[in-house]
Length: 220
Ligand SMILES: Nc1nc2c(c(=O)[nH]1)N[C@H]1C(S)=C(S)[C@@H](COP(=O)(O)O)O[C@H]1N2
Ligand SMILES: [Mo]
Image (cartoon, rainbow, N blue to C red; front, side, top):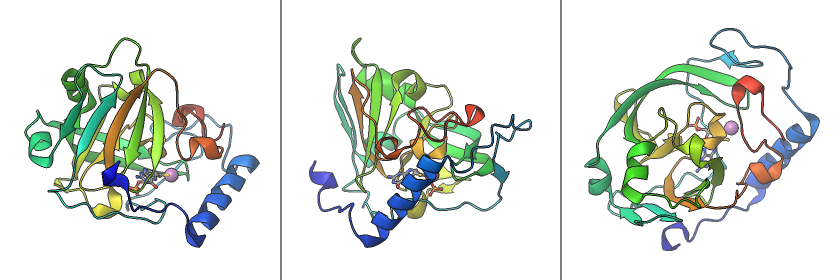
């Protein structure tokens, strides 16, 4: 894709980070097997700041170049520009973040477009059972169509009432609160509907394919 060109996912710093996380996955780091307490899933600790985690490439996407494409097994392909995206019905959700690196953050207010609204626009074909997110930094991650269609899932452009900062995936990111945060692709530009599951960046490097924090699906 033209929009994703020029992004290099290699480089020494990133390789080191990836190797570390692959080792954690092999070692089962942070797995507790505990039950979790109330609102906090097992093995998580609460933070009040908002940590930044990514591959070290934080693309700056000018709004006039930004696109959100809905494609693959859909009846109506879409290439939304910023104005078209912002003109869609707006969702306003509050939920908790659970990151696989063991921090959780409560009460994050997200504004954006519900994934259900996007589904009405593009109308996936019956064969579509999975979704792959593609981001401007080259990151990918995969979920089932059912997980994508959850009632609390959205493509968010704002956090706590302010435009989403670039470090957190602005102009817009996926937010899937029911799963560890690596499923919530930052700087998303393409949502692809597929018949077969396509494991994403971390999923092929030892992370769990599903990522349910309540089941501690950290590595798989
Ligand atoms: N495009 C993109 N999205 C991404 C990532 C990334 O490297 N690139 N990292 C994932 C991981 S591992 C986590 S924990 C969250 C971190 O989001 P945050 O930086 O807003 O806390 O983004 C997820 N989405
Ligand atoms: Mo993460």
